[in-house]
Image 1: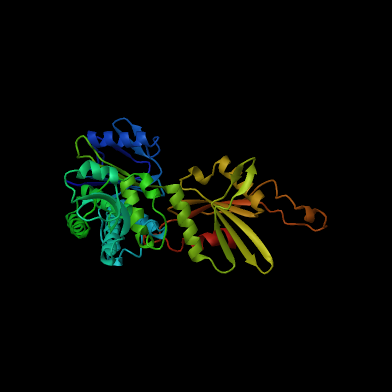
Image 2: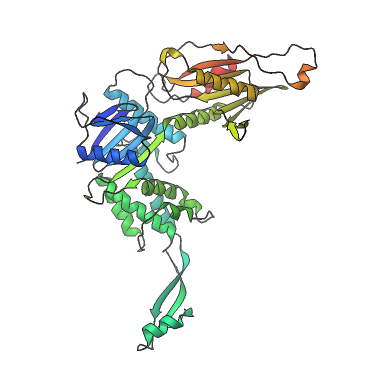
Length: 428
């Protein structure tokens, strides 16, 4: 029987029932420990009889259990409605950051209640493969050696003598065959096989069976990372790109339980710091006007071979004047709304290197907070040509600790967040 457990970042999950009746079995916990050990303990921390999650969000599926790890912007005690709200918010963030393909998923499908984010990916994969089957899968030429009754291709003299000394009516040849037996189709088939072993949804299982029936008969092989590297980009591969992307996620993150065959595991996890940065960048791009230029991760040389790069650089062009603003996104809750010294020193360096008057450390929040720019006690250095001119140059050097509400008043993902951020750093 399938179970879905929802948790927030930094929550704990153990083999003992908590106040929301959530618990792991010992086998599930062992599988989580094993997975975390293989990944340098980066996804969660092992605690007594359980795990404590870190800043990774997404889904872990172990046999019939699906653990959905959701983001959160406050430390208040969670209720069931909070999990549903952030489930929807995370799906929309993934859509905006193009981790979920909005073109292949219908609006009705996206509004439908899914047991987990994984089911969205499963449906996306089936949509893509079905579309490829309708259009027709790729055929390629491949070398094939066999014993045949007609001379075709190149005769292999050594093997022909070995195998056809008695049956002289046969020919052992090497020749080319034009068929569906190629690495691209084998990857898609492997993805379908893994999907079938993972889903507990009867509707999805039925779809998988129908797709398998329409799939050409080809040899299924064990797919590894190097198989994806063999695929060369060309116009024939373009329609396959989304299906291959999801297949890669399924195949490389799949851990079969070879011993018992009951606790197969699949993970789909996102570093919330990177997702937050990408989301803010895309929302700024949506909201920018002609006078703004938004650049992600513009780097400069810092020390020896090391470089520094802020998350987002905004250039505001007004007449002949060009102003630069720096944003560094931080997905964390800070105590007393005070940033760390290291973060402030980092922003000071950014202001120096990009000659920016203003910068902002941007944190998520669930409430409105009064903000203001703070002054660094050392101003920006004057350029050489400015030192020779007797003009008082503006050496303003400021940084704001900014907070932005990820959700709107209806507890939906705030789609005006880009406009709000521009107002926080440029307009004030």
